[in-house]
Length: 245
Image: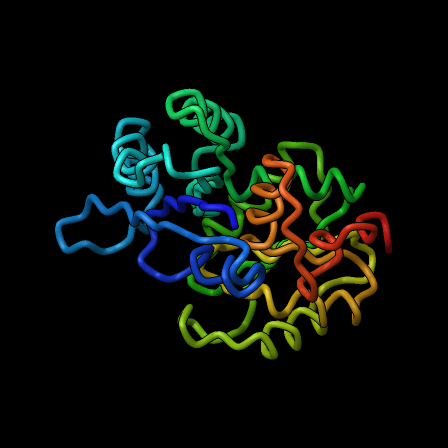
């Protein structure tokens, strides 16, 4: 078993739930939800997301996790990294890792590493409807800034409530709307709990499908060199399937 601390500014369940769904008892999560807003709600605007990602705020939250008992920390906020940009995201990850002497992974950076491992160049990026057009555009820009071609970036027409989204509706929408000329699909958003849609989509589309919490778990596993074997959640997490297409 590995102990992973999850830092997130979001109120909805995300990596904390899907890590357990994918890895079962092999991963034990410890969650710290960061909230600076008076009513305890989650940040939504770019300004609020930046404030919640301030190094002093994140560092204080990490301290509450007691990093000495952890093998890794996962910063679970796709939208925050989109707002910060990939350079600032990597800088914050490196700073947190140096401060606490622990492996630290962040969602979109993990997606980029995974896509490069898979050799993907042209992407379809799919976000949940609650992201809105601004974050959807920022997501496309995030990947383009790192050399990827984004064939499409869309808000999925699924239930607009993180707790009610069903894997089957994600599979149906993506299968019908993603173009056939992309190398891979990224389902972005840690609250967009679509890990169970990954394997059926890969079977239907015959190409890699990545999801925010899936790539975060993969990155944790890679950074630790830990043989946490996960089956049924995409070729990325299954040894020997990385180069399949």
